[in-house]
Image 1: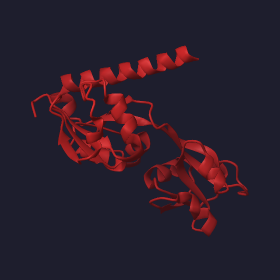
Image 2 (image 1 turned 90 degrees about the vertical axis):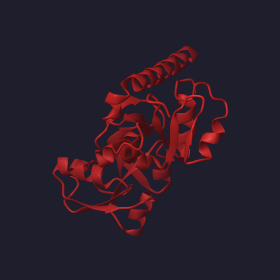
Image 3 (image 1 turned 90 degrees about the horizontal axis):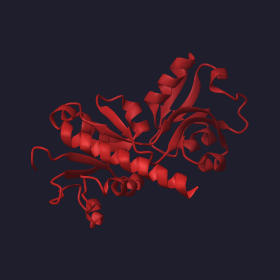
Image 4 (image 1 turned 60 degrees about the vertical axis):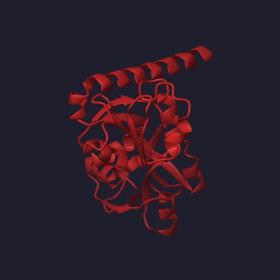
Length: 226
């Protein structure tokens, strides 16, 4: 790798393809056509650009960037906000839009979080964000951390309510839940290591500008289509 090459953390899973497609016409991939090989190895260098790409779970991308294993990375705002890591969030790509919401059973007697009683049990995969949210409301909440299937918790009396990610609300509705408040609006963000932002500023700024231009172009095309 050359001095101006970047180490890039890409998110595995559902966000991978969208992020790669957004990066395709930037200096990161430089029009590389064989993008499928990006998903075959956890770490690899693209000879055409000299950049090193590593695949990580979205939840781990901020750690790679904060500690310098990656210069830049792509992950959701919800993940960045949960851990409050020391890094720069420089661009919203607008991909994977969703909301972190407070959701309650359909027959729950309270319609908004501010009315909820102390010691309410809240199941979530976002204990940090959830705790801070209820602290700001002045409500004592028992936070029950789960790794997934959070919407199941009220059905089996593990919790009274939940805080979870939703994009369409369909899963909540199918499980007898309804959103009553938004904790956070999330989408894919470009994050940068603080030291790299100084030592590789030219390369990083060029990538940020190219991605921003692609986002503007995408929005412009959408507006024309309407």
